[in-house]
Length: 239
Image (cartoon, rainbow, N blue to C red; front, side, top):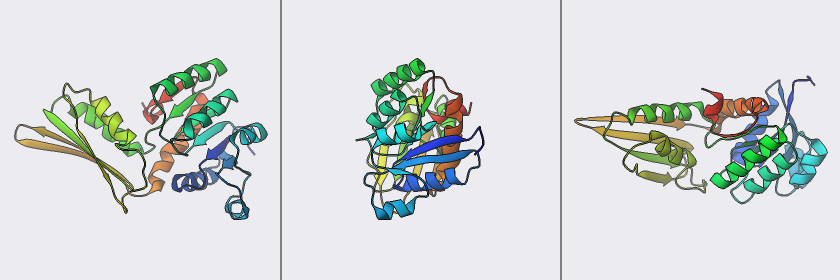
């Protein structure tokens, strides 16, 4: 193993994003799996992963001592997991939802105390970040805007973190309504529709599969090693 290899623990490894992340990390030469966290360990789960499997976050952290904790779990568990990671001096990359501004502030204080970094990413898709940046620019010139976000029917939060972040980034002097759609067959899609005098501008991003999130996820797992505070948004590593 290279001295510069980043060792990553994946929490939520049995989920759809988790499985995709495990494949992407395994295929990336400078990253390696330090272990995975699942809800219950049984023979079937042990056969699924070619790495150490845990159902206890503290035991994973203390036994494997990873460089990065990639959390792709649920709103019910993510806050506790990130607290534990930072307390153990492990850099968190957060892809789950369910945390708030108070959590981010506490994580930042913990990270700076430990001299490490962390990053919380509402969206790992680079195209989605570009969509938000373009929407922010368009909002300076267009009179009104609304957001339509569409996701698979298993997504628990509504509206999505990406939609909320887009509306906030636009910095308008009017409210930006957000419409949420949850249907089977969808992955992750968003339109920002602007209305002006005699014209409509639509900025749309589509993630057609979960592979679309992997370049950004890999970027976050590498980039977090250079951070010395907790930041919110993958754009902190892009521009």
